Length: 86
Image 1: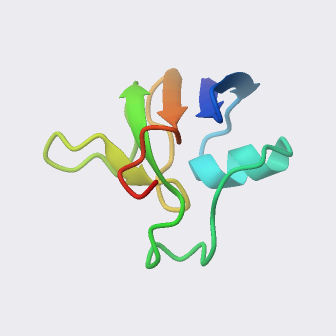
Image 2: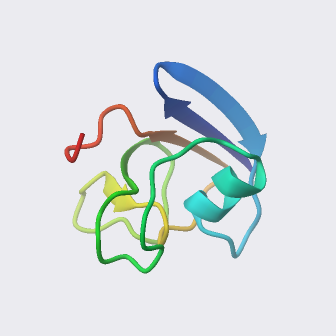
C-alpha cells in the first residue's frame, strides 16, 4: 500500500505496512510529523484523510489521530496541514 503524507506543504510518498499506525509508518520513514503521547489522548497527531480509508474512520469524519489509525485501503493521503488542531 502507498501512503502520501502532506506536511508543511510537502508531499512525501512511502510504502505502508499492514498492522502499523499511520504515525508509526511516518516515523519509520523519518518524517517530521507532529505527535506527543502516542496513546490517542492528546490529539497532537490529528490529520485529515483526503483519500482512502483507515481503521479510525468514524461516521464520515475524515479527521483521525494518526497514532491510532491504521491504513485500510491501498492508498491513503494523510494531510497534517488541514488538521483542525493547527
